[in-house]
Image 1 (cartoon, rainbow, N blue to C red):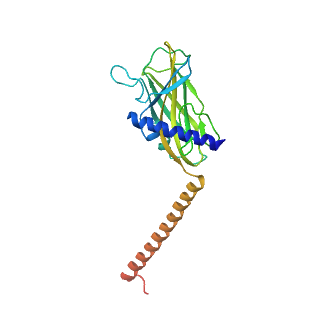
Image 2 (cartoon, helix red, strand yellow):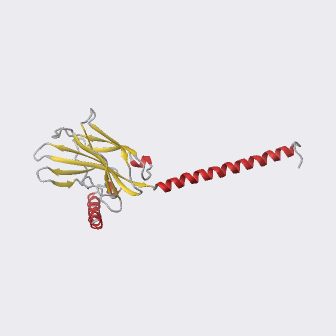
Length: 230
């Protein structure tokens, strides 16, 4: 079943990268840093990726975007350790239909070699993880904030995305999902321990060499000054 799922998601990733390349929009699937947006009609439950980026206001400013405030790449992840990961969202819409203006925020992580890391991907053991979701109203700067201290991954290459969604009133009602992503390499605990052991070993060797050199210099000084006879 996992092999079948991996084949399907891998094929979808190739198709999505082709669409993004043709449209000129470089998303995080291709190493881009901009915010990707998906539009879903609530009445039909059909989701479409906006390949030209998120909708913009009259000044050309995206109505939806996300920024990392503490990205995974900043913390240098080690397998099994828990880290603080944080981001903020900007929302330019006003006609919300949900209790909270931003009705979903969390972080997804997908193994880079086996999963397409999109907002609607389901959790799968050792392949896709989700952090706890939160809801929030916007502050005076039209910004909502998310952070988690429970972010932990196994060793390997991962695509990590910050994901949020809003539901906007109208005919029809529209749900917008938006996300940014980064590639993250998580090192094994044993690898990190070996690094620390190597640092300690070479530190001891350096101190020993420095001590020996000092002793030789002192001995030579004492001999030259006649303080000692060899």
